[in-house]
Image 1 (cartoon, rainbow, N blue to C red):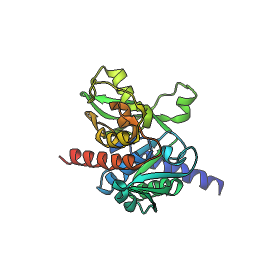
Image 2: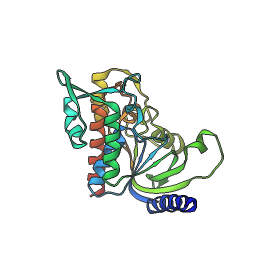
Image 3: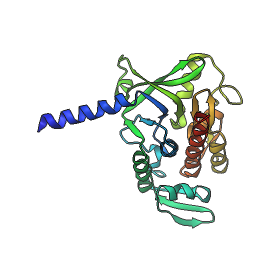
Length: 256
């Protein structure tokens, strides 16, 4: 029995890894925008993988605000909550509250149900850069990076990559730093996140969701981090709408 259990896990995992060495879309970061994007892309028939550094995908959505596990979503994003069968309550004006644990687990469930393959405890330490285009990601275990071990990575080829790494916008920073290129921002560089301004941040999170370099897209807080937008705090409508927007952009571009 012990051997069956171990062999089953090893065989199943490495079959999954081998089958996803080349994908349509690789999403770095399993926050709400990345999860929403993965779901909509998988539903359209694209081969999608999502890589999360931590044990559980979901980003900052799990913790709500200061570990009060409730979050706020504005009316404009309710159709996405409905798509994921997430319950919510009207609070005031055009704002609704929902349980953050219920919402986050629903995003994960529906994304995997749609066919997204998730690899947690992994980190992306670089991108594949070919013919002046992002063509894939460089994959390693998160503990390898955390412990500073010199262990060579694997490569996943992808037609499109999403930087959904949140406030740090790690992938965009790595691309810019290592390749002396200009990004699709006002300055041509990663501009950095500004301080909190909820109305502005919710608007610009969606506006700044775009392709910032051939093959590389940004969503969620990475969008504002790259383009110099504001932080928004525990309101998540813009994050959900950003995920839907980037999925639509990639689907349109890959279908051409």
